[in-house]
Amino acid sequence: MQTLVTDLLVTLAYGVVGVLLMAVGYVLVDVATPGRLNELIWTHRNRNAALLLASNLAGVGVIVVAAIVASEDDFALGITGAAAYGVLGLVIMASAFLVLDVATPGKLGEILVDPEPHPAVWVSAVIHLATGAIIAAAII
Image (cartoon, rainbow, N blue to C red; front, side):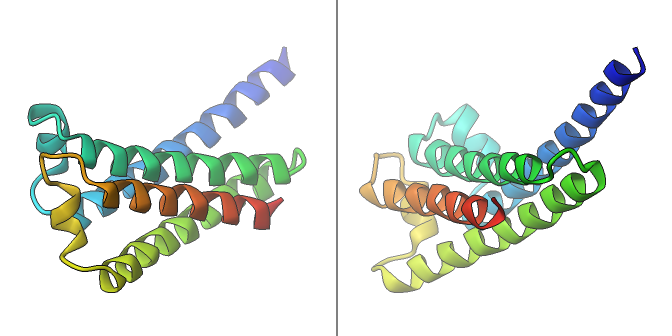
């Protein structure tokens, strides 16, 4: 019974770290895009904003999963790694967004919230996912 309780508490801790990192990711995407992200997605049903946010959240999730797997049942290492690599991943994703913005015509944030689907969103989404995968591979 003690093992079950311990495992549940460990799972809860990882879940909290993952949700907190995704919340930070949400805020970063909100800051990078003009307008309020929750309004763009839930009120205006903007697919571009939704895809950008979803790719960011998935990238963070991949990083947290890799940190948990790499911890090899060492909770302290796993929780610390999940938090540290998650923050690093968010910093790298934000940096990649800024580099893409500089390298492409127009203002990427404005393009990404356009009500019409735009191919630039897919490029930005893949950058988020690829960044998450690269960091995950470095962890493992």
